[in-house]
Length: 180
Image (cartoon, rainbow, N blue to C red; front, side):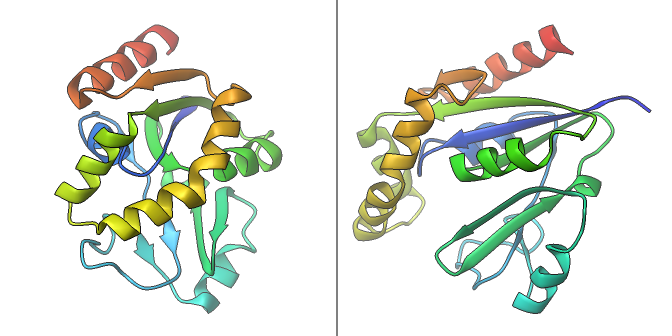
């Protein structure tokens, strides 16, 4: 069996992670998630929504590749969600750190790609998708320090300024072509 590759896309609210991921020809890993669905969420596409009890059972598995808790909401993904080729997973810095700490023995290539965009570009993207300005500002304030540390500590293999999602997706495809 070929060695699996997992691309981790990491970036702040509104930097275009989903847009870039959707332009890539790779299998997209969908997180299990507790908590309510947002109006824009689609079951099985945005997340796989599970109860607290179902998440408790998932957390007992020995093949978890990512786990985070944000407020009262828990997210995770499992090794069986990866395909045999290249998979892509959108994650935050805490999830990357959890994976690096707990998944050292998995026979998987991991490529960490940080995406970033200017604050005004991110705000415009979030407004275009229907987020409120208050919601956007709250998310920026909540995540800003963690993403600053992520970038300052160089916790990524590649860092891409996502001015154009087609260009960013093309760069990621070239990275994969060269590495794999």
